[in-house]
Length: 355
Image (cartoon, rainbow, N blue to C red; front, side, top):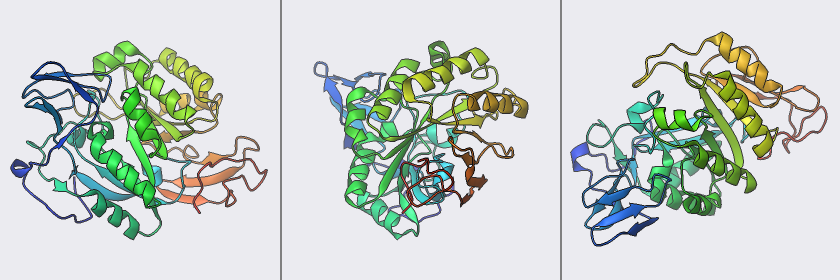
């Protein structure tokens, strides 16, 4: 992936030696450790890596191999995360490292999330202070987004950067699969302003089969994020022959409404064959059907990876007037006042505004 902002310390893969002792683990005897960062709770003997392949037992200590390692850094529209109700029309500095604690057969970003230093052709190192300074220099930039790969597995760097961003007046967003243990999440919630959580499929069996994870920790964490009043949006990839099951889909919608609230923002994203899955792309007709079905329960639903007229616009759930028009990543905030309220009826729509 091309990196469009220069960082210091470019080096070949084989010379990467940047490591840091991990947070959230315990020792089990003299040579075994257990990682407590995510619900996998990997038990590792000396020299063994966790499922994420970036955390390794070195001489009885859990070491993170990806600390400060950056595979991609871009200035993106905040809508690209996707976040549609969080500072619409603004930019956000987006960074990613490598690796993931899931191994989804259908991964849409596998070049980074399923890559590791031995096979990644270009990596950079950046300090927390360097990234903060870059973020401050970008006009109309609201902050930093942790994205591209799974940020949870790079917790130590993400946490330090989020704390420093908060101190610097920058906003933070995490684009994640939501598969994190409770204690690390609670520590993080103070410093992350917005989440987009990828809810893969409303079936634990299919989570295990196609992602190597579990559904229940993700649902628990969605409720925790909502209770802490962090900004929350959800992405759901409609995968042919998996999450296109209408029974699973109906159960998911009912759960979102009952547990997270009827104004939860949901992005329905079109699947394309990628990585280890070669099923046909999601049909536009099915996406439109699920979009229409969702609108009956959730007023803030959007389609991704496809352009259908009106499916990216935001309409007030009270008076139904269009308040934000979107075409690709061109955004026209035409119907909101400076407090994020509908200009027509005064209904609050955007909780975190763009002053």
